[in-house]
Length: 391
Image (tube, rainbow, N blue to C red):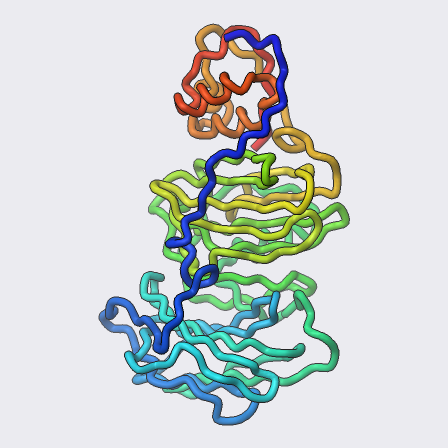
């Protein structure tokens, strides 16, 4: 294949995130009651959600309840996940609020392990919150604070389901390099305290990892501002063995595909709205989970790194660099394809799209189309110098 001419390519790779997979956060249906889903053996039943007083939400069950509170910004919402629970058939999905609470939403998430009933209160000003366990009922107590609603608030008592995620957040704040990959423990129900000044985490319960500690599910998205832009952590439930990332210029976005994994959270859209990022989307696709970072304006510079608890993306306030800011070079041998190079460099032939994305300027449009058609197996030719992103 001749590589003499350089052409700029503005081809939008097909990246549809199916609306059917985005039901819930992105495309909610109008309904009058909670969709309870299949009944789980041994799960307790949430029989009632009410407001006994202003700024309080009470959750009643048919037996002892165990719940965990969490905060979601943009807009500010306080949620409670009732563990190992299912919703009663007559439980309403929407409840009008009072005081600082404008609305209460109730969801049943039977496909999580364990199943969860999620109660989310949308508030109209800053609050502190406390969840009181009274046996067969949980009471979420909110206390108003002065000042406008904040986008993100540190919380030293935040409940984190994964110890390694807490460590990763602390590492991100310190600026230290990521530690070597290690298997992540399964969810234990532990409730470790969060270090001071660690940004609020929006985590969800996830299934256990594979037996060897490798991940099989993508969970929530964590993000924080930096001096240069914004840092995004894609949380998984174990070490990530195989993933591929590539950018698309029109409209500008960065895609990360996780082969052999699924999405374990019902939240599919994260309106980050910081730096050059507008939002982050998650979607289920055949045989993989996909994360898409949507940019505002021109494509910015970025860096993608594997961490012990997922994949970290740093978006910089700087001009675009094909393939990311951290790359090396590889000179092809006779008979090699992009799949061959990806197998040698990453141990993952499916990451050929990462290398193609970094080298679009080397190839003609017809050559790129042939590579996509053949899944990266097109023979490149000898002594071609390819930019290979460090992952």
